[in-house]
Length: 297
Image (cartoon, rainbow, N blue to C red; front, side, top):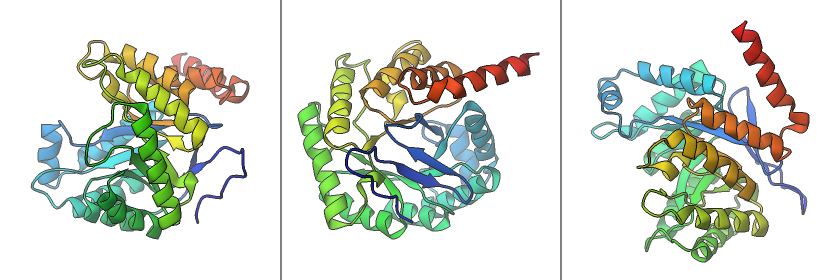
């Protein structure tokens, strides 16, 4: 079932589901935490385990991300010298046997995306597509066929644009092609405004926040990003992340792919929800504080 269209002026809700749980991403909702850990990139031992058919580390990663507060789990199985479609489908079946959280299926390989979508029970988020014509033509039909939602990055074959204007132009193109040519609901398009490392250039976040504000104001779609990218190469990354995400939320970011094992960052996000009036009367914040106090006694 496709996400219902919002009335003019109403926030768009990106609806994700597992077999038994629904998560809504929206500008009037609490921030959606997408756990990033189930990913072999940069994890040599995890890659070796997966090549050997040992998937036990996935269960540990699921447990850690869920306990940290993840609402959705990003799953990437891009391991060299493996059958990625089969590995991704197997990982998704395993994850759905141990948690009811919805899944974000993360791959650059079209065959792997299709295998993951066919194995998934529910309504997935697909990570991701760019504004390149051939990528849109390869991935958007899959998204439509499986009634999924899509993360889209406003970069093309030329470059990752460093100016907000170019990112907005490409965002408009993605939305136009997805809605008009493939019949994908605007609510099911989640834009990644391109969060870049500040270690190389401390002005990049200002461009990203401008991009977020303009996407929110001009298109109203939901947004996500790889939040850990912003602090790459810098010391004390947790403190930087705990500052960056609430500022991004104020600019319009509605979800992030992040490591939910970091309480400092997760709590900063939940505090920001209170101040942005996305946690009515602060009830979730109060309930979490009471639960923490009770477990300490």
